[in-house]
Amino acid sequence: DAMVIQNPRYQVTQFGKPVTLSCSQTLNHNVMYWYQQKSSQAPKLLFHYYDKDFNNEADTPDNFQSRRPNTSFCFLDIRSPGLGDAAMYLCATSRTGGSNEQFFGPGTRLTVL
Amino acid sequence: KQEVTQIPAALSVPEGENLVLNCSFTDSAIYNLQWFRQDPGKGLTSLLLIQSSQREQTSGRLNASLDKSSGRSTLYIAASQPGDSATYLCAVRTGGTSYGKLTFGQGTILTVHP
Image (cartoon, rainbow over all chains, first blue to last red; front, side):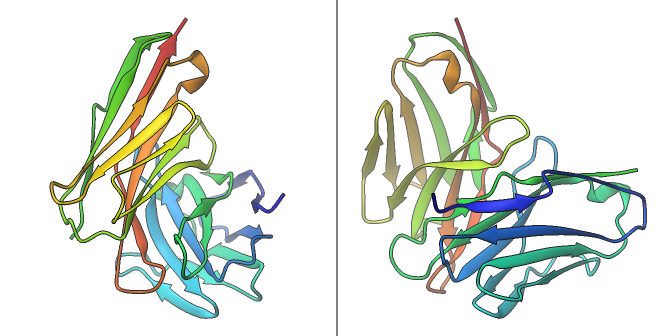
């Protein structure tokens, strides 16, 4: 089945220690998104890629970076995680044209100690 | 700036009841609206997508309606079951690109008890 995969499902890191979260997709969608969702809050868009073009949201902290080496993979790098960065990180994909429906992965739960 | 509000924040019903979840948005210039389900600690599962030109969409026991001019959508769940217990999120797509961005509501936490 075509899907969006996120690894790892759970990530524990220490305060200030860089961490990378991974997202891959078999849908061949050209747009990939990263959302941050804190407990009992709505998902908040951090940034997205349209093909290789990176689009950052205005209020996304510089601590968050992303890479998309090819169509299938996208990474979220947190350079110096703080306690406030503990959250669920959701990856989503969509394609241009058609319904533009977004498909989400299972998420990575990040804990910062 | 688009804002999305969901009412109620939480809902508890006995099994078998029909129920309605509400979603409102401030800017009616949307391309589509999606309803999602989220189980605790999990990702989002897309339930229904309504294009701005449509009035409703149905999938099994779920029916979603859209009144774009008044900025409202409802998700109707018929004959609720304990397995329907989850958080339900609505999101509207805005933006001038060919793919847009989603703005989410805070969600409605639904509990269906046997």
